[in-house]
Length: 82
Image (cartoon, rainbow, N blue to C red):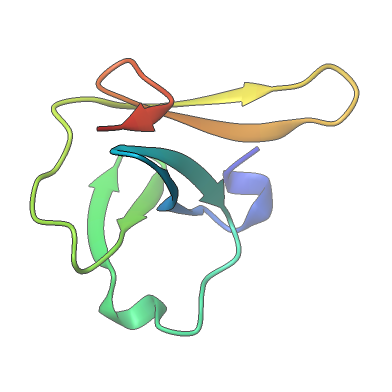
């Protein structure tokens, strides 16, 4: 799915519910894409926000949805960041 859409994945940290922040993924580059932190992986590139100081130990990407397929990210096993 990632390679079909250009081989780039942007992982954003969005929203704020108290100290809980959700992960959102996109294969469309944002306007400031050149400023994002690039992490090379076999087969595609992952981009993380430039202001992010702490990187996850593990970042898992998974295709979810039965009828409307989408890419989901899991940070150290969770779909959110505390």
